[in-house]
Structures are given as structure tokens and as C-alpha cells.
Image 1 (cartoon, rainbow, N blue to C red):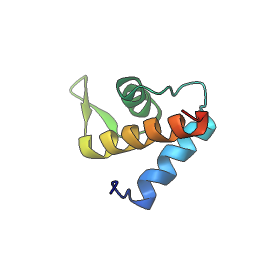
Image 2: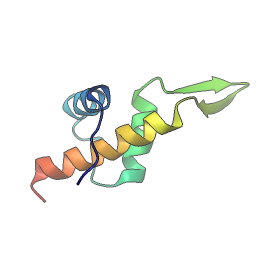
Image 3: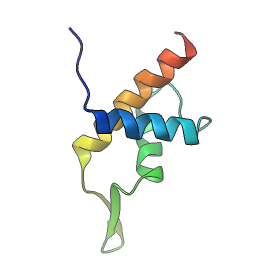
Length: 74
């Protein structure tokens, strides 16, 4: 049995991949950095970047990784 993702995670991930197809690769760490750059899930607090929703960022990056791999057919 696989994991079931919430609709909002899928929707955000698919929208990011459609809008920025060249930005996302098959690697999780790279995708996580891109998700942080392209969304507002990271805020600046006292001049330092702070991730407010770590779990959400991780889930979106994970689904993005899976979605990109599936689109490529590997």
C-alpha cells in the first residue's frame, strides 16, 4: 500500500511543475529547495530565512519528485 496524499499537496505540486518544468528534477533535495524558492512557505525572521511549515514543504517536494519521475516514465 502506498501513501495517500491530500488534494492540496497534489494540486500545489502539479501546478509548480506545470509552471516551472525546467526547475524540477527527480531529486528530493533539489525539489525541496525549489519549492521553498517558488512558494511562500519560507519567511524572513530577523534577516534569516525560516521555514514555517516544514512538514508541508517536505510533502510537496516528495510528491513533486514522484510526479516528475512518473511523467518521464522511469
